[in-house]
Structure formats: C-alpha cells, structure tokens
Length: 382
Ligand code: SF4
Image (cartoon, rainbow, N blue to C red; front, side, top):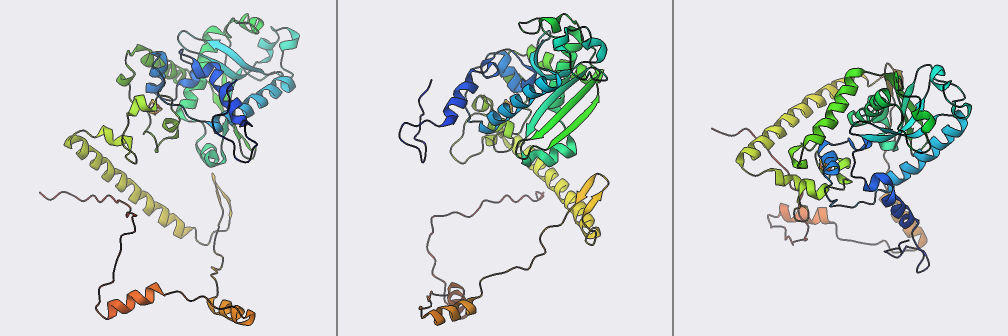
C-alpha cells in the first residue's frame, strides 16, 4: 500500500485520495508491466517496438479516464457473462502476440461441445468476436460516423485470427474452451459504450481474411526491429495526438525541449526540413480552404431547412436568440432610486480617441504579456 503523495483538498490530514488506490492497482495490472506484445498494444508501431524490445518507460501519466473506462468495461463484461453466458475476457495466445478477447459468442454447434455450464443462454448465428470500447461523449459523434479506428480494427482482427488458428489458450480457467480447438470466427462486432451517458452503438461485419493478414504482418514488422526508432511514429506527438500525450515512451520517442517549445521542433534539423514543413503547411492550408468553401456553399443551401434527419446525418440548429447586454441607463436609474453613488471610471476609448484627434501620441506601458505568435507563409520571390 502506498501513502497519498499530496494532501487531498477538503479532506482531513492523512486522508488518502481514492485515486492512490486506483493508480497502484492499475500499475499492478498485467498490461501495465508486460514486455510481451498484446493485441491491445498495436496502436502505434514504434510504441509496440518499445514494448517488445523491453525499453524502459520514460513517462508516467495519471490516465484517470482510462482507469474509469477499465472499471466500466470490466463491470459490463462480467454482467454479460452472468446474464448471457458470453465467454468474456478469455486469453488467446498466437505465434507472436497474445491478448484477452472481450467477448466470444459461440454458435450452436460449437457451444454444444462445451459442458452445459459454459454454454451461452442464446447461441450466436455464427461464432463472433466482440470488442467493447468505452468512449467519452467528445468522441461519440466520431464513433457514430466512422466506427472503429484502424488500430481498433487491427486489435480485433488479431484476436479473431488467433482464435481461428489456435483457439482459446490452454490456461487455467479455460481448459474446456481450449479443448474446442480452432474457432471458426465468422463475424466481428464492436460495441461502443459512451462513458458519460451510457449510449450504446454496435458496428459489425464479416471476418475478412485480408484484414487479418494485414494485422499479422503489422505485428511481424514490429518484431523484426532491434531499435524502436527504426519504425515510424504513427502519431503526430504530444499536444496533437492524445495517444502520445499518454504514451509511457513519450520522452524516449520525441526527446525534450524547453518550456513552451513543441517537441515537434526537434524534427526540423536543416533547411530541407524547413522547406518540407512549409510545403506541408501550404498543402494543409489549401485543403482547409477548399473544405471551407464546400462547407460555406452547403451551409447557404441549408439555411431554410428544418431540423431533422436526412440520409446519414441529423441536422439541428442552435443560436438565433436575442443578444442581451447590461442596460447602463437602467442601472444608473436603479442606483439613483436607491440613493447609491454611480461609480465613475475613466472611459479608455474616449480618452484614446481624443488624444489621437489632437495628434498627441497615446502613452503606452509594457504589460508583461506577449501577443500571440502567428505564422505567415507566402510564395518565395525568385
Ligand atoms: S509518443 Fe506517440 S508516436 Fe511515439 S511511441 Fe508513443 S504513441 Fe507512438
């Protein structure tokens, strides 16, 4: 047990934060100290390489949202196991990757080969691998529109591929499942659950052999490297990609800079790098401008359309309300009625305008603050 490191606001001295317990438990979870590649570690090739090469972690992060997600995830799966008889959190071990499949729903023929106590209450039409993902409300629209990310697809295809080739791992607590041998997984299902309001969204599709081969190839490529830096960074770094913000190898991957200086600056070493970054900036600007034009035209066309669902999208309107601001004259009258002195402050705008009108320089003093730095990029003159 570890004592709390910082006093907890509002609590009696010595009273621990409940997060102390949560973080200690999280650090002890197998995935937090493994050196073997798990299917859920395939979110970034360089990060996966740090794991398999046993590189020391350089960063620790609080990760409270992820821990909350773990609790919700475990609670939902346990209840699904009890109520529906799903096989949950089952271990699979492949040739060079392992993991815990969230849920496997067996078809009738496969389930019939299990002892009665292990059979599902309702068998699936086909053997299905299911992955349950909890998401914040901020990511929810993205989930509804685009479904699982590339990394999430890779993870679940790895589970499905291992089950199809090896079946369940022969480990304690699932010997009967292991005796089934290879499982004929035909379907993949993602079940997204919103951490904030409990909304549920399902995305499912047939197993695709090519996608599974691509996922296995991705793992092979990671295992071949001796130095993680041989592999590309799959994300744009801290401040631009949340996966990097919470990466245990953030400093190893990006290095360190002074306060307020983005680590991405370390990628620019010479004028060729500067030229390339400027060209990327211009390309991004052109795409952004083209996108803005498309949006402006569509917005104009929709101006009189009532809120409803049209095709794949739901339209709603916000705003359009009268803008209110304090009524100075009414407040002066209220002060007069109450016999309270109306506060008088110098009117900055009027004073500046008067000095300018009289041709007198407006006196200025340094505030200590700095204006925002803006980037301006124009075609070079030859
Ligand atoms: S910091 Fe980002 S790019 Fe680097 S290893 Fe971690 S997740 Fe990958």
